[in-house]
Image 1 (tube, rainbow, N blue to C red):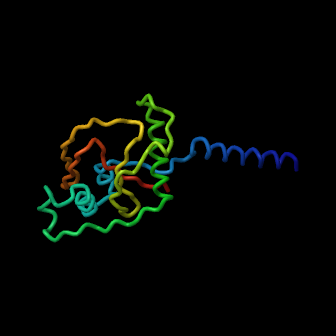
Image 2: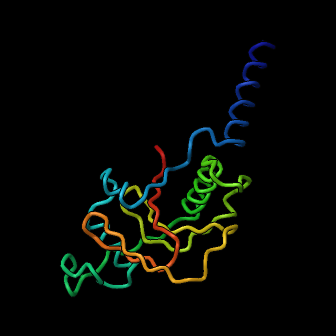
Length: 164
């Protein structure tokens, strides 16, 4: 009986440490728009909605969007999903290894913009609170799946999907 209790305690302790320290299995995965579209996580219709919200109108996408185009309504994002996205961002930053800033957590990231939920994916723009971006206007157009996206800053749109 004593051995069984010791084994049970060891298992509980191992699982608790694993979840608490490293988050054993990743909470979610980030994709670029191009990756998410290429893997079939987003459709061209999804991209059009996201582009409309990003660009503020139909600019450069007039051929794909009618004059009366209405994007998919943005569903509200729960606090639980928001925190999971931020924890995933912190985990990926720590595991990247290319930055001198290694001691980051979810509080070091912020969701600047939310573009909506599309099936199992949440589309966001994130920023890191510990990085300063140049005070210049970035004027970049990116094409994904035949849809154009305009970036006026140095942040990019990310697609997050909870791991199953």
